[in-house]
Image 1 (tube, chains in turn red, purple, brown, cyan):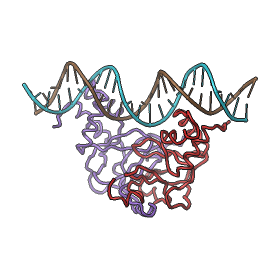
Image 2 (cartoon, rainbow over the protein chains, first blue to last red; image 1 turned 30 degrees about the vertical axis):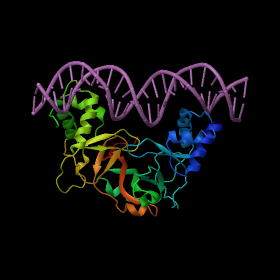
Image 3 (spheres, chains in turn brown, cyan, orange, yellow; image 1 turned 45 degrees about the vertical axis):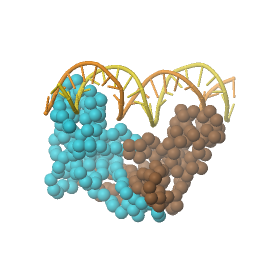
Image 4 (tube, helix red, strand yellow; image 1 turned 90 degrees about the horizontal axis):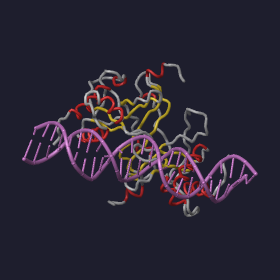
Length: 148
Length: 148
DNA sequence: GTATATGCAAACCCTTTGCACATCT
DNA sequence: AGATGTGCAAAGGGTTTGCATATAC
């Protein structure tokens, strides 16, 4: 079914090692160090396969190209558990979590916690099944630097 | 600076009349009825101009192409006012608001609540400046129809 | 040996842009 | 007339796909 290839491993490793979300081009650059000649198409294919395999999570921020993160790794301080939530289908479901996007260095890191009570925000008669939340601001590093 | 053209009016009207968010191709199809020969490029250009003019709002959902909504005034009071998507006046305040996305009919409507307290969700040292929230589920109409 | 993954190039979707012509004021 | 908008076609990012070859099992 799913073969173990140098490319597959390199893609997975690049994400696990980085501890943050990476775009396919970023993955390519890093993964090439362990898989010379790696192609962007292969990155896209592996990233999709690894996602449905439950090993990666696709992270999509409004207006930005997709990024991916290794499952359940936190790169910036906090960890703890994420509260799971209703799933629509029946696949390997990643834990429910949201993301923080640093507008300065453009990094995206997972955050724990969730405001919850989403159903109350919807108009009457509407049925909330899931939600996406993205925080924008400055990460710890960029918050300290004056300007950049 | 900004000229009044048949195309500009048609783009604006299509959004005002629809009461929901529309993608550029959707705008094109509707607006063409009042501006034959209208081109998709023009829709993109007008939509951008009208946005910086404050007459439209760009709505970006994770993983989806951009949509736009008319920025209409909305009387006081409603809880679910902006929910219907026919001819009823839509609600879109210049203020902070989020969106509900119906996974069945794919409509996107503004909602006016907000969980708040976003700073508490961020890791220590992180500074939250803004956030995006999108609710996914079924709108009132689609919630009643037999699930599929 | 056979099925699957890879690399390459081309195609696709969404959006932007260059340019000559049309249109508004 | 002068400035701005429009249509068309081509280009640009991001992502997917067809196909022949290479590779894992």
